[in-house]
Image (cartoon, rainbow, N blue to C red):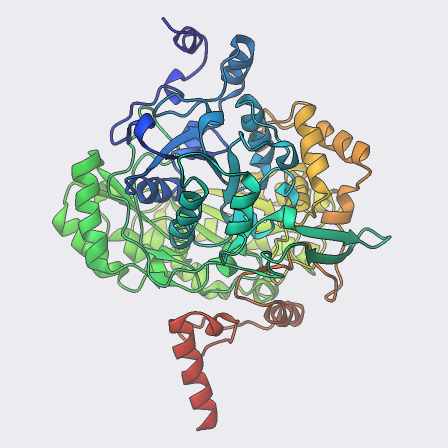
Length: 616
């Protein structure tokens, strides 16, 4: 019995670490020259539910000279045993130590996983600081939504891939092949200079940052000819074929079903929603391709449930005929429709699903008052909300979950009261129509102002002013027998700090990890005092990043990342928010000239139509 086998008997959920799953790709290590480890910095159950890793895993392993394997963050018990027994972090497919790979690619989707990245590198025996790595160490790269502000992780990542990875990965492989042209790695500096020329790739060591005396950013300048002043997000025009032979996990994972991305991007323009801006424009997958992919997933994986994934599935143009086709072709298939827009159409759509597909309904009004919904551009009148709820009750639903946010710009206690009143009216309507009180759960999260959104300049509300709102909401909803939950405001504070942080935050992340912080997104693992100590020792104040309103002219740490939606448009949207003016959805009305008309053919066409209409 190997040392690894011995410790697997001593940890929870050992199948997290065994590999050997159905559809896992095993290649000959000795004859495959390029070896890449794909990593998600959270547990196996969460990482296996991520949709990006399977896409890259499939693309890379289709290349004859590339071997791509997976690795996830070991839970605390496993990490302790690995350190105790001197077992370095390894990949699932070959059990090779991560330090033997050429590249390690992390998917950064959530700021509170960043300490896990450091822990995984350390478990692998790889220096956590990129400046300390030698030519013999793997090159560490990162992609995902988190890298739209890469600066807090700039000390640890050799280079970032900004935007749609499907397009840039083949260009990156060409550079890696050149780097290993004789079967051996050239100096890592050679690769970094080569990839810095590729659009969408950011190599932080090739930039110099200066700060003003007040701590704000003074300048951000390239230091080598290969580095570009602005990093342009990579954007695919057409979604690549869906993955229909994904790895099937041995144990139950968070999203334990097949997944097909039906569209990417959202045009609704909710001003708090980073995804709505960084994934523009909307690109839909053809209906027939989705139906074929569902059949292949059933055949290749044995799934009896398929999730149609997008930011707003009810906006998919052919969603009704798609659901009808799937129901007809695969009558025993359960269909999951996440992220539905609050509308009667969504309820009717859910009602058309096979019986076993029907679950509780979840909607996100986000704000209780019409004034606040205009501010955040969530253009759903309360009459439409109540009509939607009435349709749900009519069609047999008795369980609803409603999502709201607190701490929105210009929010008052009266706006909080509006949430209580709205939920009360929903509950009363259910009692009238159903003859019994419906089950209603309310979730109230704290606004985290995100980069590349119109709210990137606003201050996050402080805990002391947020607490009375939470207490008021709790008192008001308790009287009506409604279950309320909210996020720990300290977690929201840390998320705001890291998401809008600059390069200096690297020392804070590193120190918090040294103090024992890992799996910060897990309530039982979150130790806020570690972070307070790390900030104090680093001479930085979290309030500077979270609670400070920024000038519209301030140079922002993520200002060198061009998502395609320029700051001028975001400033215009911020002004509209302050004035309570909505911005229409450009899929159904005129082009809003958000900046993507420079890039994408669909947007260019829409923009041309707008110009023509103005002339006439």
